[in-house]
Length: 248
Image (cartoon, rainbow, N blue to C red):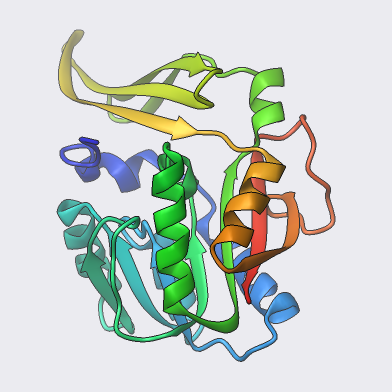
């Protein structure tokens, strides 16, 4: 999977309107409401440029972020300043850490990149081995019935100063995958210049298969809901869904 190389240079600019602060506050609420153990140390999978991690570290948590992209980690290190965040360059389906964490997370649809069953199993096994008993593991994902009801569409987004991201998407129902192609172009003097392009294959998930993978790898599903709304049940009206699981 050749992702997040040159694209990394534009990542924070592309997602500058994403409300990381609201989402980090949601994670903080989840910790306060559902964790039965005191949370000091957080393991974050697919941390990218550490936007979530920086906000949570400012709340007093110690964090280890894992990501396979060296460029993303390089940017994250520049952003974190003196906050207590450490980074590890590794594939999230094949990593090792030398401590047990109080809380684990995989945010911004990281589990969508686990396109094969063995990848999901390995990732969850590694997370399970890295968490204390009763520690929570949380993640967001795209909910299959919602994807099939409101199917992906091609998009074009103006980022800034003539910088444009074009997104084309193809749905593979048999494999539960959306094949996404990103192209970043820049308009200068009415001429378009290709900057970079990337392909991302993202898996969408169903309740029972997630429950199966979690149970098989030492977790119990405690809660499934719409992302950012603990009181709203999942439905085919909303792609963005959230799971709270507990290490047993």
